[in-house]
Image 1 (cartoon, helix red, strand yellow):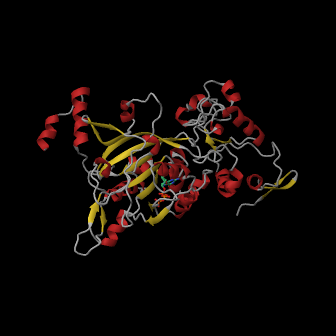
Image 2: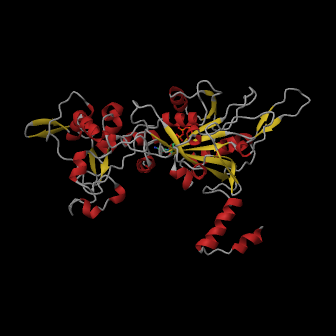
Length: 472
Ligand SMILES: Nc1nc2c(ncn2[C@@H]2O[C@H](COP(=O)(O)OP(=O)(O)OP(=O)(O)O)[C@@H](O)[C@H]2O)c(=O)[nH]1
């Protein structure tokens, strides 16, 4: 075993690595400047270990801490933004391409001063928190300084009540049926969170014996200003029924189907989905995120069977309904860059939680306050209403959402399709044919045909339209 003590001219001394680890993890030890040699090692395993061991108390005041290719020049062009980094220019020739550990933690006094200076820059919507903007000093210092590409934590300023606005809505034909995509802005972060609403009953004005209230956004249906025209409202999605060249009915703030919800109608299904580029877009099989998104929309699109009151009458079927809130909280809130690095640490043998901790992140950095506000804007989950059936297996999510004010009437498990398939012994397809995910089958449909025709006829795409006609 290697000795922890080294003999020097001054006698026995603690191994420098251990001394540094002790200083990093012990709050009472005074850390003298110049006591420790400068560490430029690439991805220093000791610092990784210290980050993993230190826990949230040590890092709670950091803006961010990370390994940057800035090489002793932390504010070099591109130093904070890997996409702009030019290895040759970022440092001197002999230093280029090394990684340096940089913490942007500052004394509290200077951070609060910077926050005050930046407060005037923040408008109500779609602005990052002041601590994520460059300070006045930094702005003066260099016009070209890149804003740190740090993924903001979702709950940035809990002092201000959360406010969301649905900026636009449109119909999306999915392999499971029609959905309405809603894009939201909020006053907590600069991200465009989404709501995917499944509620096909909005296409019809038929009031059957059993009808459910429409799932519609209050902020979308409201009048935004006196000058708003009917066309403005239609364009941002504030319309009723199905929008077509011949059906153009703008909604009004009062537009809601007022109906009593019988006890026999189950509460709407709700899924809070966190963005996962790898799982949803390139079909990564490191996680089940793509499948979960698809399965949530599928489940919500299933017709709801309402048992009849008398044995002689058949049950009634009503259209399925529900909402997927798609939160831009990639990688459980740590962002795609860190998630990619975490995957490499996982390939080195660490699990998903340890990998996050080793990068100085929490195991899960997501927050749900904005998601709850979006649901309530859609008329769901308020304390006086019916509540929602939350599709999840994550107990922390249930707890956090209840704490943020969502009324949950039931938790519905998200069983992985392959597990269910094994249990049922059947041969259910793991991915629905027609799904636009990697591994899905052919995509087709009326809207897609129209889109492809236009690409050929208006944009010169080199496709033979007859191929499609022949196939019909
Ligand atoms: N950091 C990190 N994030 C991951 C990893 N795998 C998936 N994710 C992210 O995890 C999020 C999904 O969270 P999950 O933990 O799968 O599930 P959950 O939302 O907590 O729980 P359920 O509601 O039961 O699905 C998405 O943002 C993914 O990008 C990983 O290995 N590391």
